Image (cartoon, rainbow over all chains, first blue to last red; front, side, top):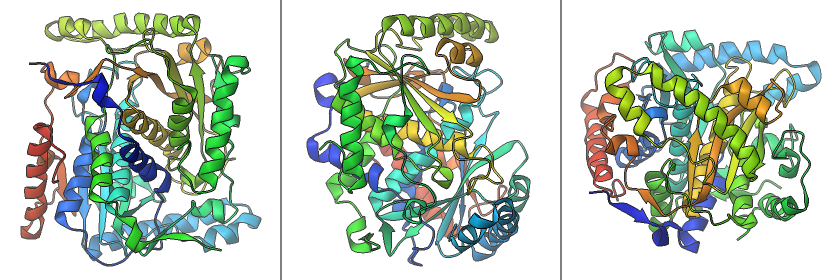
Length: 251
Length: 251
């Protein structure tokens, strides 16, 4: 029997729609706000299940989830962060280096649970539907799992921080991963004192939120918007104004 | 002034939390269910803004959005799909080839709007916070934007299908993109007659939903769960049972 969700039931109620947008617009990368309170197994299970229900190319489900709660394991990862962070600082021009060094970029030790989400590129054999031409589709599927987990965690009231400053082979070695398993995201997860209203790099003046109208293209990369595209551009401008004020766009 | 969302306000109400999980668990890749009804500019604007508020490495915001509504442009992309689809069919073993050919894998022409989400790898200069060691982080950020759009679209009652069967340089040429701009996702978007309860490849018996307990690792890739990990595994089993029955896990 092919049961399915019918057209008339598909659109969420206004309040449910607002909830989804609230998760999306108030999600933050969390670094310095973690509380030591444990994350319950029930909540951790739900956010992992949210990840497991991401879209995946050819239903490959290439992800695995490594749960890390011991301080000794976290310390190994934190040591890798420290080493890479020193290397990273040297890459910035002098004018930006001090700002870079002043930023809190991870909460590995303070967050009660870390989750490393990985991609097994051979999960479904050599030929995968939808991955015959774009080989990176399995990596992209795994990132969709990361974003599902992040939004579910936001709704559960948890903070999540994505740590990406490490030498990848050294991380694989520290966690005992075979080279063929790609660590996509090393996530710090926990309850938090608060979440910032805006991304910290925006508040710090590192980079501004880009005007979305500058990111739009129509029909062709070099195409100019025609008259029929203008109402969309006007909506985007209004929605970005709302979002910058902390309101949910368009609602 | 550093305003922020306080701890006590962070967790969503039960009904708002359910809404977020409903978006995550009922999102589907849509191919054959599109209706010709136009997508309003207000709705298209909101889902694009959701994409623009994805996490991005170093606040790089590397994404751009190409909106395609003309049948002539879609036809060019559909021609590329057709050519790649023939090549793809030849890659499957004979036993799976007929099934592969019978699957509807895209809704390019039938969906009223297509959106190509791209990644500009040079958007923020040569050195980006958080991308000093894992260069793919900008690609991953762009995928987070795709998933934000997809979940927002689900809540708005729209279907989204991700097309990935094409030759990438030919797609860049067809849409006038410079080689340095990476097309991450070519999305077909529109109202739909219905959404399937489960992924079509699961229903078709192509691959089953993997048991999440088989995807779990603890502290080390080869680590066995210890007694303190067992409640999480039990929650995961229960939540997966619920999800397979169409219920929202754990709630």
